[in-house]
Image 1 (tube, one colour):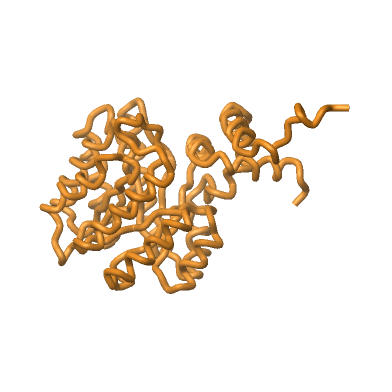
Image 2 (cartoon, helix red, strand yellow):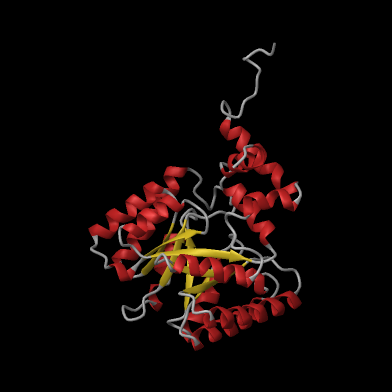
Length: 318
């Protein structure tokens, strides 16, 4: 008989168990990881992205389309990615999807040649502008922050209505970065930022680490945006942050057309539906493409609790 004192059980050590599984899964066969991924990724093809987007559109939910991929090592890949994005925009617009687009600059050569990256993304924004739609420039790890802010400034100068940026609340510099960009903000064409917590592993010198600390700064950043008439994409699955956002919206009497909530596809659908039912604008991030494996393993590192759902899918019927 095994002593209860030494018997390991996931229900006793849930955090340890989830972290262990999350650390192992990236080294397991892709077919196994797909059990997790299929809930959070539209699929490998643009047809998958269109299908999922239409389903959400019928529920009154907007989308932002993202082709998975990042941190390329050759500029030839950047050219291929650019041409693919141009084709994606044409295809999505012909399908009459109610949404816009997100992209990661490292997918277009940011860390290899920032000027080549700028020219690649400029072509994509130009294509979006021809349809009067919008490109969101994602914020990546701290190596990219200054480069991506500079990139955004250049694009914003030429395409004031067609480009936005992402800020990460866990970075200690974020509020000051927002303040530094106020020189290009106007009430007629407000700056549009997606505000998220941040998922990259950064040192404590530059990033807040504690849950309460990150949430506090998230709401401070959001309040700054409301105070100054910016258009925030409130990107969170954290119920306390949603409740905090409601309070700020009420405090500043923000019209519903001057902000939106944003969520990842497949994450906290009950909370998402609750937000929509209250009449708030919602946009869902729709990732697709063959490079889904890296995206999926990052989601695991960000939220190891998801690992328990994978185990249930493997061993519990239904």
